[in-house]
Amino acid sequence: MAATESSGRAAAGGRAGAGRLRQRGAADRRDARAGLALTAPSLLLVGIFALFPLGFGVYISLTNWPLVGPYHFIGLSNYQGLIHNSVFLQSIVFTLKYTGIVTIPIFVVGYSLAVFVRSNRKGSTLFRTLIFLPYIVGLVAESFMAVVELQPTSGTANFVLSKLHLMSDTTAWTVHTGLATTAICILVIWFASGLTMMLLMAGMQGIPADLYESARVDGASWWSAERRITLPLLRRSIALSLIISVVGSFLAFNQFFIITDGGPGTSTESVVMSIFQTAFADTDVGLASAMSVVLVIVVGLITFIQFHYLQGDGD
Amino acid sequence: MASVRSGQQPGAGPAPAGIARAREDSGRRVGRPGQGPGRRARRGTVLFIVAGILISVVFVVPLLWEMFRSLQPESTVTQAPSAATFGHLTFANYRTLLSGQDDILRNVVNSLIVAVLTAVLTAAVSTLAGYGFGLFRFRGSGLIFGLVLLAFMIPFQAVLTPLFLEMHFLHLLNSLIGLALFYTTFNLPVGVYVMRNSFLQVPREIVDAARVDGASVTRTLLSVLRPLVLPGIATSALYAFLFSWTEFLGALSFMTNDSLFTLPVALSNAETGTYGAVNYGLLLAGAVIAMIPCVVVFMALQRYYVRGLISGALKG
Image 1 (tube, chains in turn cyan, brown):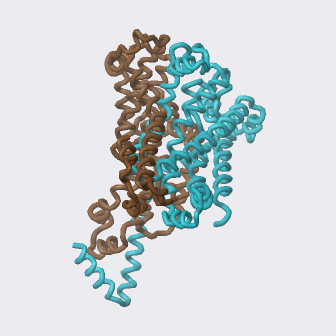
Image 2: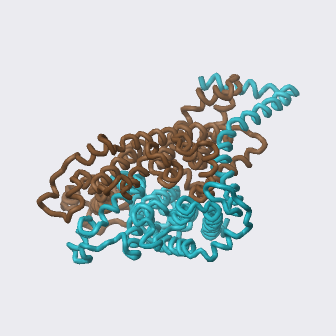
Image 3: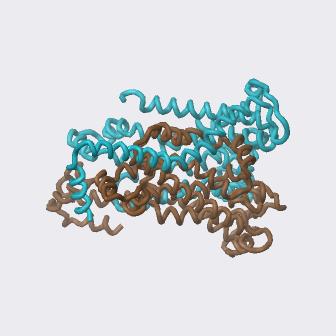
């Protein structure tokens, strides 16, 4: 079959001349039509559910849109209001702090795990899978489990910690800002390290083995090979894993909504939670949209800065 | 263990040195005389496996522990742990969840419908788009591709409010199809990217040969290219399924009718006690039910997942 196809192609290629040019023109038009038709559904969906809402959000943010009822243009009032909106500002500060706390541990743990599982030793595939499971299972299910296990008296966390004489078994984790944040950070580091591991491992496996071989011949230590070969060649993967991790942390919602519901007060309310509450509890859609626009800009900036910083120079 | 012992046997002389050095790890330095080089490698393997088991325990045991806890009756889950009752296990939580008046079976089915629909739609739309971007030249191709990838830069969390209003106008709130369309859109950047790469990797000769044979665009896709891009299709469907199954915020925002809640939203309602007192036993069992499809699907298709990560990582 393959043989007849390729001989047919050779015959077609051999027929040169003006007719071929005309055929090419018709084929190009056919290609153009087919290409547009094939890609149209994806553009349609992205247009309806991502691009339009983005523009619509900017529009709404310039109004006092309530969930129901008429609205008026109020210019930049929503944005001016944000500067004095202590709940929103607090949620930004809290989310930045949270992102700052979890990013480095996720990266360091993820990187170490990637070094551990990158070899093709016996068992490494299984270990990879097992370490990755918390990420696959999803933070939502795990947050429900955390709620149960962080209960005073009955929860496993207190049981273990009190047996180790580290904590009283009546510690109420979820109603104390510091404790709740600590517990959620540990949960998230445990949850997300596997993803960083997988991303970095994929990058590490793309580095040619003979680079390490020649470094070894030159007498380079493991550490200097890691520093001089792995780190520079891994820059793209590092950038990607950091962007995914930082943006993911900045958009955190599930764990806070489920475990603390933002409390005590609004002290553990993340930015996305703050937007969610403003839109659906306070039904101030205009203000929530202004918050969303700020969020898009901040996330865009984070991505841009990290991208540039980590892979800008050199190429 | 056994391999350490055999490695310590004095008979291991310098003879297998060449073989051992060829193996990846022991090649660094030839062992001191009298110390078999194979021994070093074997000890390394054992250390690796022991360390691997210890690390895996950290990541897996909490999940297994919660499966165990979900088999305890509510009264045990909410009491101080006591040796007397701790080992009494029962399927009571699961029975209550999957039958009776407050059952969440319907929510499990909702989640399944949305996840499967999202997976199928994502795979279909991504395949068509990947085919178009990968194998056809047309004006605007770059622009459209850029716009589709732009959805990757727009966090769905940030368009939720306007999207809520828009979906209200389109009568897509409280609709499993609406939710699936929303999920599909935000899975498209990854799916389209993976599929475009799949089609770009198809040898040009195969495409040209099909064309010369007079195969139509559709026919080429269905009978010539399909087997070649099937792994990519599996990758995009898998990502979409897992995303949809574990998604919470969108479902929480777009579903207000409790018969249409997906599983995570139903559990969240149970947790905040909308249906009366909070039942932690049920919550654990529900969380375990939410875990199971992810584990099963991932275990079965994980090589496709890793493929996606690799092609995503190259994108960076």
